[in-house]
Length: 109
Length: 212
Image (cartoon, rainbow over all chains, first blue to last red; front, top):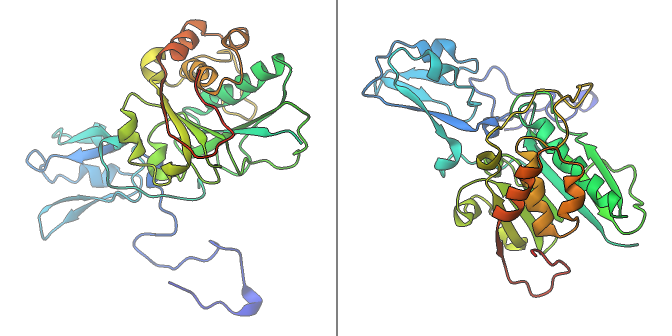
C-alpha cells in the first residue's frame, strides 16, 4: 500500500500510516510473545470476558462460526485473558511448541 | 589490525534485561582480566524499557586495542547468544554473521528443533544449547532497568551464570576461573560449563574453532 504525499510534505518512514484501519500491519508485535493463549471451544461459554479484558483487542467474536477468534499478530502473551476466563477455556502454551506464527523482523522494534 | 570478536546478546526488555547485561559485561570483564582489550555496552537503538520487547547487549574482545569507538551496534557478530529462546521466531538473529559463526541458545529443546526456526543456519559453524532456566531455576532476578537501576542482586545471578559457563566452554575465549571471580553464582556457572550441548558443522574454510 502506498500513500501519495506532496513533495514538500515528506516525512520519515512510519510517520504516516493508513487510517482508519482495523489493524495496523506496519507494526506487528507478535514477537514479544513467549506464551500463547490456546482456546478450548468446547469449554468456552462466549461470555466475551477475554474480549473485554484484552489490552490489545486480540479477541473477537466470529458470528459465522459462533466462536471466539484470536489475532496472533498483536497478542503479546500478557496472559490477562487466561487469568480472567471464568470457564477455564484458555490455557498458556509455550510459543515454541508451534511452528506457525513466525514473523521475521529485521529490526527489533 | 587484529581480529575483533563481536558478541551480541539477544534478550527481552525489563524481565530479562539485567541477566543479558551481566552476560555481556561479565564475559568482557573476564577477558580483560586475561589481558585482552574489550568493549561492552548496552543497546542503543532498541527500546529496552518495555516488558518483553526484543533487545540487544554487545561485547567486543580483541588482542589489540579496538579502534571502533563510535559504532554502537555489532553489524557482523561472530557469537550470538539468545537468552530467551522464543526470540528465534521473531528476529533474524544471524543477520550479518560471517561464515562459521557461533549461536548459543538458552533452551532445553533439542538442537534440531531449534534449527527449524533459523532459516539462514547454513552460515553457522556451531550451535550450542544450555538449559539455564533449568539449572538456575529463576528467570527474573530483579527488575532494575539499565538506566539508573541500583544493582543489589550482584553480577552473574539467575540465568546469566549458566550461560556464561556455556560461553566459556564453547568459545574458549575466557577461562572459567577468571569468570568465577566475577560471577556470584559459581555453582550454576560450573553446571552450565559442564552441561552445554554443542553441535558443529563442517565448513570448507573458517577462521573459527569452537568447542573445547
